[in-house]
Structures are given as structure tokens and as C-alpha cells.
Amino acid sequence: MSIEIPTDPLAGHPATAYFWGHVAASGTVSSDGLEVTTTDETSAGVLATIAGGELTQETTSREYAHETSITRTEDEYTLSIPADDGKLLGRTSSLSLPVDGHGNYRFGAFSSHRRELLRGILEGCGTICFKSKSDTVGISFVHEDRDLLERIRELIADCPIAAPMGDLGETSSGGYWFGVDDDAAPAFGTWLYESCQQTGLYAPSRRRKLTHSLEQAEADD
Image (cartoon, rainbow, N blue to C red; front, side, top):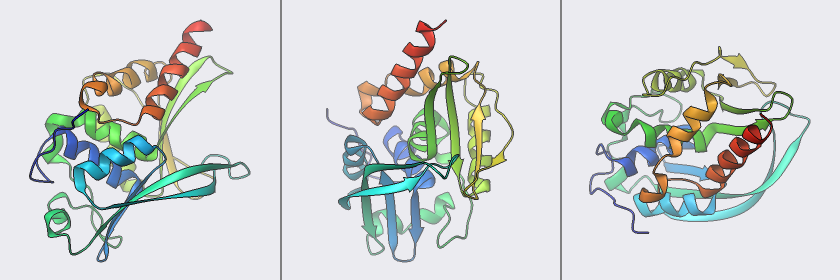
């Protein structure tokens, strides 16, 4: 599939919204450049197609955010873009993304592409699971930056699908998290991935996880 890419990396466009959602959720912007990490190989390729840069792969083991006694091992793909790439990094201040830990989050340029922005954020710092105890689908967001999670909550509140959320809580690893209410999670997740195959702006492994979780929940109704 050919992915449509605007010439301006900060333009209001589905591809840029998806890319910067990933950067905000699982990336860093510093004086040295930009890095964004994903566990989905296809999505990593999409991000590189949108923004350029160099992709590297490594196998890592890390603790679950909600339960640090459990670890998982998986492949990670990191896209690196050096600071001298003026095409992309020279104007990141327009979004006020944190640079070296200073800044905030403004996504006004992507207000017409909130679905792609939230999809990138979900794939960067969100979780999708089937809750066997309650036969429901769970969607939550986990990040060390409380301000980012507050901004994500605002984006979800403004989306066309009603998606009530729980309060922010602390994780055992020192970060923060919140979840979409179980009753609203199926409709919210379905909306996030609606028509994504037409644009190619999604992580197939995450979409499969959502589809499988929804099927499990429906089978147990």
C-alpha cells in the first residue's frame, strides 16, 4: 500500500497526526535528535516512510507497567532522526513537544485527524487486553508523564465516541495510568481502527489484539 505523505512534517494530515502521536507516547525529542520506538515491525516501517531516519532492531526485556514482578521479551524497532535534519526537527517547537524534558503538548494542527493521532498514541503507550474475570475488553494508557496523560484524556473526551474514563492512578513503576471504562472500550477501540487499512496508518499486531479481545468478549456474553 502506498502511504500518502505531506511535504510538511507538521501539516494537519492523517500521516503526520499518526507519527506525532507515536512520538509523544513512545519517543523522545532532544537537542541531539528524535527517537521513537515501537514493537510492531510494520508500524516502524510506516513511521520511517513518513519521517525518514534510520531504523534499528533489538530484543529487549522489560517489566509490565502494572506489575513489575512480570517481564516480557519482545523485538523493538527504534527510528532515529538526527538533530541536523532540519526538515523535521527544526520546527518541533510548533507542537511544544518536550525537548530535553521541557515543554508541553499542543496538537491543534491535528484537530481534524484526532482518530489517527489517538491511534498513534495508543500504539505508543496504550494497552489492549481481554479481562477474563469480567469478560470485557480493557483499554488503558500508561506513561511516566502525567501531563501527557491529562492531554490524552482531553483528546478522548473530544472524540465523537462517548468514552468515559477512570481517574489517573499511579503504577508500581512510578508512572501514571488511566483506563477507558469497560462498557465504552469496545466502541472506542472499534472507532480508533475504523478504515485504518485504507491508509496503512496502524500497527497490525495491535489491531489483531483488539479484534481478538473483542471476539473473546462477544463469545463469552
